[in-house]
Picture 1 (spheres, rainbow, N blue to C red):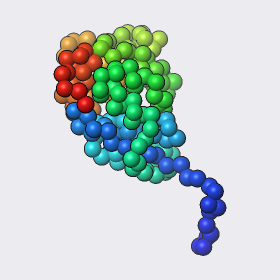
Picture 2 (picture 1 turned 30 degrees about the vertical axis):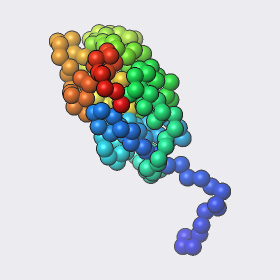
Picture 3 (picture 1 turned 90 degrees about the vertical axis):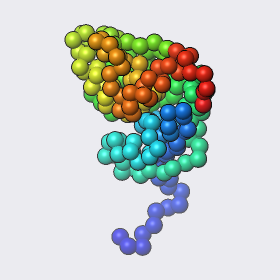
Length: 183
């Protein structure tokens, strides 16, 4: 309907994004009404936005100077307050099983690691559900707030990490207190 305008009092909800500098590159944070819906180590928030559901993508993306609590928590975490990310409200889509696995991920404390099988058990699944745990980590939209970097293969090593194994190694060293220069 050409010429029709919406009332000025209506507010449109958009996904707000901010980049937070870190020693391993920019951390893109995306939030909807203060709830974090995506986070990851990329200089381009559009990369994270593209991983959101079509319904969230339909809201649009706006780059902001200050995202508030999620950005404050990220800066505090990078400065050494390792539990700062724990209180940030997050939301991501998934099946009930995936949501249980993501909730279990948030219970793995900074400075500790568990295996994929142990993560499955913490989510109330059998140890044989290690692949489901790995899939939940691979599809996690909100790193490091949902700390998939704390999950390691039972065979040793670091396993994979969407943002690179070097970022995963840095996060784990940071949480062990092995990093001297902090952000």
